[in-house]
Structure formats: structure tokens, C-alpha cells
Length: 120
Image 1 (cartoon, rainbow, N blue to C red):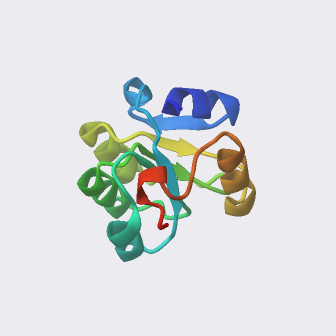
Image 2: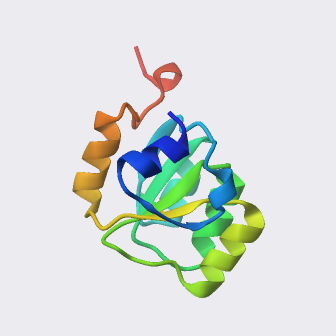
Image 3: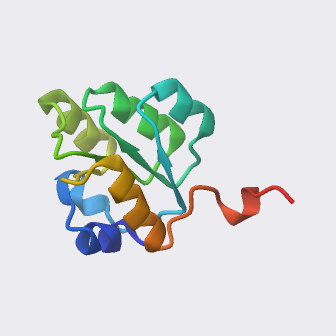
């Protein structure tokens, strides 16, 4: 599913890189620990977090994530939005808490583990 479809369906507010929402989302990962995201998120994943500082952009760029969704109506810091725009990393904002947002993403078919990564 494309990030643009997710944004529209879940009424997410785009805060950066609006021109880069045509990305296919391959999975999702939720964590507020950047080291956890670096170790476990995969390329093309959508990251759900409450973190708003600029370091989230560096992690998302390094891992080649599809984008970042901030929960609970949190807004990215100004520097964060600017860096995300430079790096073409979409940051979206949801009014929902993490638990409900993740459930809705799962209902849309966004897995937490890609089919090719599942254990037998």
C-alpha cells in the first residue's frame, strides 16, 4: 500500500516531504528507542513513534524507511521538519495513540513482519 493511501485513509497530517508519499509501505515498526529501530526496522517500513527531535530523521534516512508517523497529535520540532524535508523523509501526524494507530495500520494490511522474514 502506498504511503499516500495510508495518509488519506487514516486522515494523517503531512508535515514534511509531501511530494514523497508515493512510496510503497512494506511493513511497520513501533518504538521510541532509536537503537531499537536501527536494529529491527527494515527498508520500506513505516515507523510509529512519539519522538519529535531531529535524530528520528537520521535514523529513518539510514534505514531507508518509508516515513515516520508521530502519535498523540505530536508535532515535529522545526529542525526535525526541515531535516526531513531535506532528506525527503515524510513525517505524518496522527491524533491517535500508538495502540489504536497500529491497529488501524494492521487492519489496512500493513504487517509488523514481512512475509519473507517470517520464521517457519
